Length: 149
Image (tube, rainbow, N blue to C red; front, top):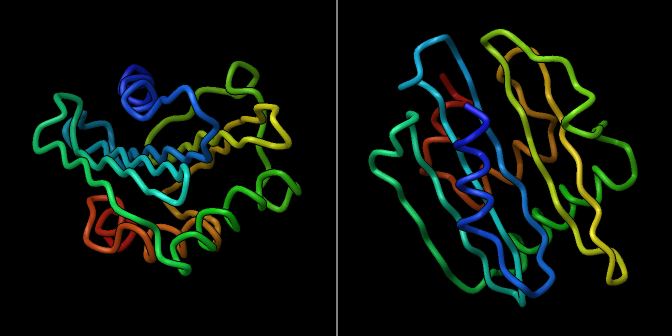
């Protein structure tokens, strides 16, 4: 399942600094139930990818100019990681979880340096800033629906 997150990260990777968040929801042991949502903000443009299942069927990439609410929601989510309001760690040091669980990989440009980490939790309830981000930027996505199931 980690390979899916890597593929989305590569799809969103760019040479210029960007802020990005990749959410993986694993509601049960069925690989077709896994939901991936990726959001990247770069130069006031948002790129998103939403897909469900390991085969990446119905991959839905979107790109648009961020409105102020979307811009604030993503920057607030990234800031929550940077301040420690949402705890994160090196992905290699975290234990492997059994479904249901979620992971959130984040990356931020901080004064020209890259900061990154992973938040993970048992269950599929995202912290409030991330729920707000998904509701604001990806309201009709698999991620939004997965959070409401």
